[in-house]
Amino acid sequence: MQLRNDWTLEEVYQIYETPVLELVYKAAAVHRQHFQTGRVQLCTLVSIKTGACTEDCSYCSQSIRYQTGLKVHALMKKEEVMDYAKRAKDAGSTRLCMGAAWREVRDNKDFDRVLEMVKGVNDMGLEVCCTLGMLTDEQAQKLADAGLYAYNHNLDTSREYYDKIITTRTYDDRLKTIDCVRKAGITVCCGGIIGLGEKHEDRVQLLHTLATMPQHPESVPINGLVPIKGTPLGNQSPFDVWDMIKMIATARILMPTTMVRLSAGRQSLSIAEQALCFLAGANSIFTGDKLLTTPNPTFDEDNEMFKLLGLTPIAPFEQKEAVVE
Image 1 (cartoon, helix red, strand yellow):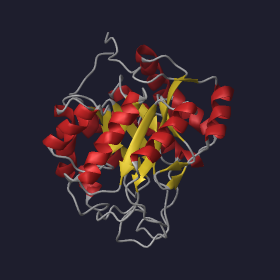
Image 2 (cartoon, one colour):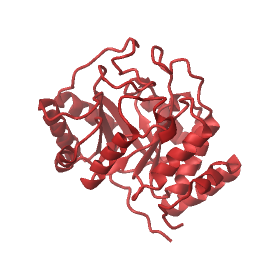
Image 3 (cartoon, helix red, strand yellow):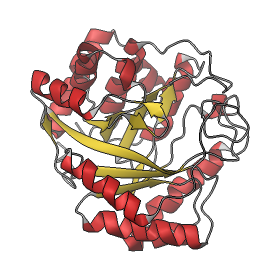
Image 4 (cartoon, one colour):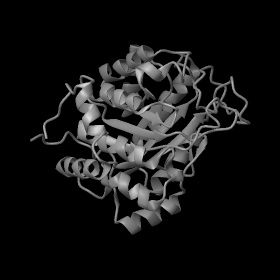
């Protein structure tokens, strides 16, 4: 299947609205063309600076605007992060993502410390990813020079629905940061969240935006909302697992060589439901009992699932540009 960046919105709708069993079958066929089946990357996410964020993201416990009972933590020391990275690596993770609850990166001692963390984790042989908020070209280049492999900056939802979820920065602000990351030669990790109260049309439009970027993101996390009390979306109904499966399958067909990551919300899925996600094209999960501040299956639970499903962890830096037929 030839890579395309010229998908029309109508084409994306047609794929997304395919009957779910047929959609999963088609996605699985595309997945087999570009990846070895049964191979899934284990990633670990660590909150290196928690809470007191000035943004108003309606789903997030780390916003200073909401009373969620979250304990604020200043930026971790490098030694603490290195110890966390070692434990993650020993447990099988090959990618460490460091998240800081910042609106944007500032050129100060904290950013200098993050650069040292990036160097240290990179030296351990792990893929190192950061999500730190908005970046300038110069900051992205500093991260690249330090050895950053990937930068996460999600679009969350469609452009049309975005201001119902976040008002403190624009959709174009997010796209600008993604451009900075791409220009610096860092791989792009960019996805979204389902269960925010959006419509199916918003999900289709999000996938269309990702799939028509000049270069597909190397990594697309598909998150399910984990409602947190105290946030505006704290009483939101649980997302539908079939919507998660449809999102993963559609993303796989649109972006055949991208790592599609089954991310937040996995705690609520059974092993059978996760198996359908893997069949539909997901080839990465986050391990460890927390994703920043939300619950996640434990290492032991994931090990049992891998044994049951016959899954094999992917080595670091294994993702390569697929041979396009």
